[in-house]
Amino acid sequence: MADPRRLTFPTDRPVGTLYLDSPTGEQEETPARGVVEIPAGWRVTLDTDGEHLAALAALPPGSLDELVAGEVTDEHLAALGDLRGLGSLMLFGTFTDWAVPVVPGLEALALYSEGLTDAVMARLARPLPAELTLAAGLLTDDTLLALAGEDQIVAVNVSGDRISGRGLAALATLPRLDRLVLGTSGALTVAALDGLVGAPALRILYLIGPWDDAVLEAIPPLVPPLRHLTVTDPDGDRSPLSPAAVARLRERCPGLIVEELMPGAELDPVVGADLAGALGDPRPALVYFHAPWCHPCRQYGPVFGQVAVAFADRVSPVHVDVEDEPEVADRYAIRSVPTVLLLDGDRELLRLPGAHGRAALHDRITEALTAVP
Image (cartoon, rainbow, N blue to C red; front, side, top):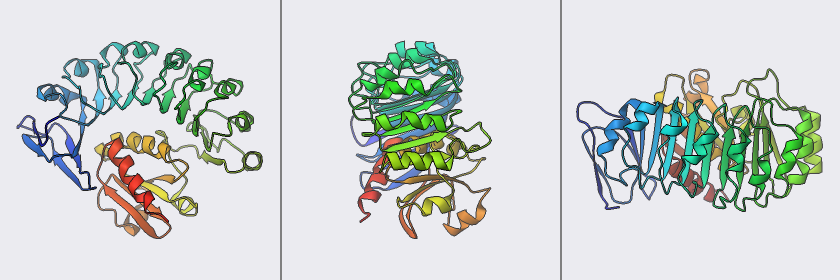
């Protein structure tokens, strides 16, 4: 890819927002409109909507590093151009399997659509991305079974109402699988989690669904290498686990971090405890400030969630809605959303306003945590 890059977009109106990240940690935000000069070595993330994807067809391959698009339909994807050279792709909408773009060489792929089925696996370029998110109610264990042999995978986030767990043994064979998020409406049983026993590198496990204390009986055989467990039921009316059961698990598995997320949290896929609780945690608090009226926040939330999963044993993640908690926003001088803060007690380790790509956010948090004694 030649640098600096010169990107040309339609001039009549912006087709999204460009977030630029320099190798030294500088950030810039600019509308995707007209001619945009990209300094050499900077990462480029475009946040847009499906209706604007056709405008990207004129961009040469390698123009973007990351693409996030919402409200995407099959028609929008049919007009999409060549995405070769893209590192990360995140799509939200109502698109179906056949319309999913085939993009070789992706590092991360996240597809959120109720129109997806197991057939989407046949559309994805091989080898699969190292980080894969598929969220759709129609997915079954066949999707998990299709991951067998994809030894490069380090993170899987799969949600589907028909996942029973018979495909989990396929995940246990992946030598580099570090993080797993499983979402289900109840078909996944506690016994099925035994399929994960023997996973050589599984460090972080998130279970989303109508769980109760019984699920904790499946956890000790996973330790080690498991170091972090989170259980939540976002549709329930109470915390999914009893304090006594959590205490027993911690006693059986010293060093295991166990978190239970309260119902009503908008898990996508990580929401921490309240800020006061996060600040009381020995880990630094990773705080995501957002608002319901903020369009970039809607698409940046899952980006934050994926990155927070990667740091689950090093940070305590939490969401703050600035409309619900304006006093918290004032206390930390939040002037725009989205904004991410990394706080070690009263010390601010990182302030990152604006929506940034998954890789850029990951790198900035890594740098900030390196400075923690």
